[in-house]
Image 1 (tube, one colour):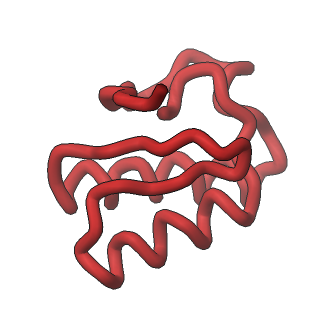
Image 2 (cartoon, one colour; image 1 turned 90 degrees about the vertical axis):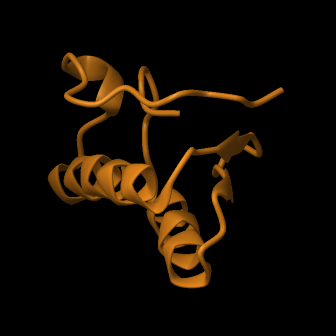
Length: 73
């Protein structure tokens, strides 16, 4: 989910909703479904996405600090 992606506020909202509901599957802004292994991974992903959105940068422009599994189609 995280490597090479440009994140949007829609991605941040989706992950916030997943964290609030305990759901481990998130639909990204480009329509991909991503399932993470735990709420801890959701929280890590949220940190990365929030940082990218806040700075206006893309995740692909810098080596990612976290790389999580991507189980999308």
